[in-house]
Image (cartoon, rainbow, N blue to C red):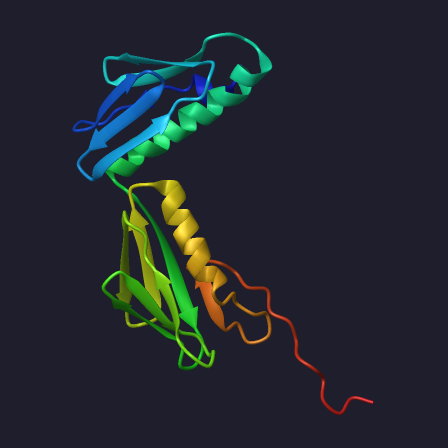
Length: 180
């Protein structure tokens, strides 16, 4: 049996879960999320806790058991507190600026790079080099942060580029000049 799937999800105050016809809808103070429940998985609500059970013991139902529990747990956490990823821009002259729903990044290319921010994502910029991507959908927050980082990945020689806060970039030594 799935060890993750067996754990109950506690539902905080202010969060409401409804399910019908295989669709789970989670409402909370930060927003509303809905997702389709995988086949072979049954949702049970009881006094402030939610459990996920398998309808059968076949291979597909077993594989979806922990996945369904984690997805619903992420939805509950998202509408209650939200998710965020912090990015850091390093490099001389590298900076970011927000105009409406477009992020404009100066990353050492011949022209600035523009990135359209999707709906449901809040982006804050501090001192033109620190970005915080936040929202209620964990998958969307992670994807947007990953796409922004992919615009200029940190390089190993000088460390210039966009990296996650706390990410370690393994540095390489440059050429040894004049060594014969």
